[in-house]
Image (spheres, rainbow, N blue to C red):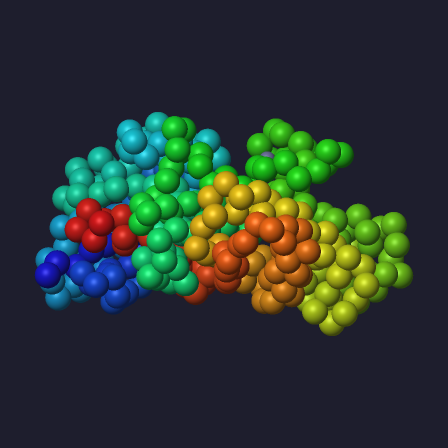
Length: 317
Ligand SMILES: [Zn+2]
């Protein structure tokens, strides 16, 4: 059987790997993304790492899947990212076919993450999963009946942009009060700085973790201080968990998936977020509407989209 190539191209990371026909990862080539290099740098990096791995493969390699950290028009196989110059409307799959002679499919990282966890991670053996990746922002993907549900505009599962607050801050999407403005790593860091400015006495440990420098407060510091029991940090984490639980309950009411899988740096920071999310879900759930949807952490860690990319490769689909 042939091996397949998979790539996960993110805003900061660049992962390329070789998988066997059973979806086992054989070789990994990972580095950092130099976004300032634009599209040409990224394509050069992809070509170099892919060719290096294919040269080491003990089996022929004929197909490839790519997870891309930005909007992808799956139907037309076009990348639509505007964050890095040169990507808008670019046919990345076609480029791979032309330059590496591999049949290739491309999807965004949230859909790829959902597919990766469904096929090879926490969602193995289920029929439907909702996957959320919570890091700087919040992305999401849905697998229903074993297939990724992308929706008309490839926007299905974007739970980060569900409104959870009327008086909320402006979101990266231009909307107001989205889940992302309360529960993303960026939002938690921002809220940490705001609370430390207003009430430094309830954020003393968070401040200490950042050498007393208020402007250096990150989500990571807030989570660490919360895990140690700091009042202010716990308040911020619980607000985030409460908003997340509300958004998840909305998703459960619409999809009633077998499993909700939380990935990304914020969700993987430990049970400090997951436990209150489960408690709030219990609190919000109606006694007469049975719900056995499980909420779990991603099993493949930061590599869910890379495994999903492998599952996108035409030979593993
Ligand atoms: Zn939004």
